[in-house]
Amino acid sequence: MKHRRARVYDALAFLTAILVLVLDQWTKALVVTNLSPSFFGPRISLIGDYLTLYYIKNNGAAFSLFANSMVLVLLIAVAIGVIVYLYIRNINTGSLWYKLIFGLIIGGALSNLIDRVRHGGYVVDFISFNIPQLNFHFAIFNLADAAISVGVVLLFVTLLLGSILKSEETVKQTQTAQKTSPNPPPATGSELLQPSKEHDAQN
Image (cartoon, rainbow, N blue to C red; front, side):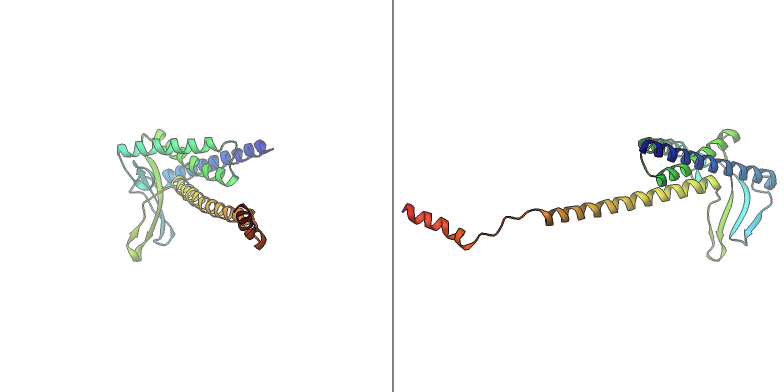
């Protein structure tokens, strides 16, 4: 029964990854079609100057980090290795929550990888978040970047909370064991006097 449930969870994780990949590729295709050319195409305002859409070609990683850098290649290789290792460890176990988180991360990573293969190394980015009053301009990203980032944050928070709860449970179990462990009965007055009587008799 547990293995059957685990297989269902794996299937849902797979569907989550496919959904992220399809949505990301679809939105990127719309952006390339309607907002080209890159950097100089039209801009669409969704929420005033706070959230806008425009097309750029990103040669770096998520949020335009490490553009044209060997560090990027190493980070991607390490990240993929860690994700695969963690998922394999939980392939027949683990909760649905963990599976869905992995689905978000894997789907986003695969979609950006497809971009790099199709476009010769760059990724289509198009979401720009800004706060003009604070002169804050967040790096331009796409749905795959958002899925990866949300998945990583949720995974970190889940692992952190799980570690804290496990530590608290261990402390409670230790305290319960100490309370329920049998204590030696207190010595009575007659028992305390018995060794003295035996000593006197020997003398």
